[in-house]
Image (tube, rainbow, N blue to C red; front, side, top):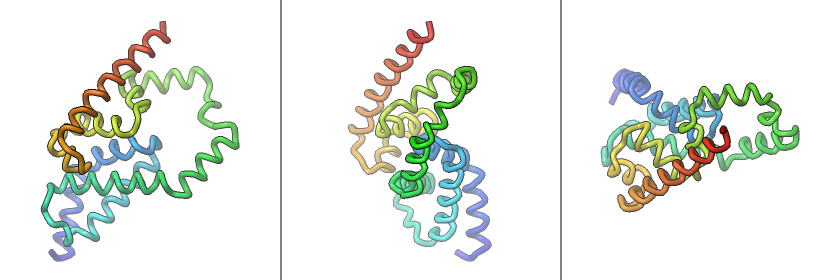
Amino acid sequence: MNENERARLLEKVMLEYGDQLARLAYSYVKEEEIAKDIVQNTFFKCYSKITSFRHESTLKTWLYRITINECKDYLKSWAYKRSRMMEIYQGNRSSAMSSEEEALKKWEMGRVKSSIFTLPPKYREIIFLYYYDEMTMEEIAELLGVPISTVKSRITRGRERLKQEVERREIYEQ
């Protein structure tokens, strides 16, 4: 594959999967700018390693796997740990938001979507992949390297936990 073909493929991939990958990355790191950086790294890796893509899975699955690995690497990184420690040290800037700003933010995100972020990562990623990115259970199993039965049980448990969280928030809002 020559450089022009790789560039055209990268452009197609960015247009077709960019938003999905950004949502996936955001579901892990919960910071829009960091998620964008992760997606940019994913596209860089796609461009530089496309010749080694073995077609054992779909291109979409391969991109999702790169994105998930980038997210996990970031969450293990010193930069992430340092930023979290600074937030704690400075009195957790996010809690410094006024209650009005926080209410507006929650309203914008929507009850369900914001509730998803309270789920443990193993449920959150499955819910995002299945419902937001509309991947099949088989695709998710292949992407995460787990049996389909695990995907099914995580979807079921994730839905149950999500329902409980939404109901809890509704009671709290009354």
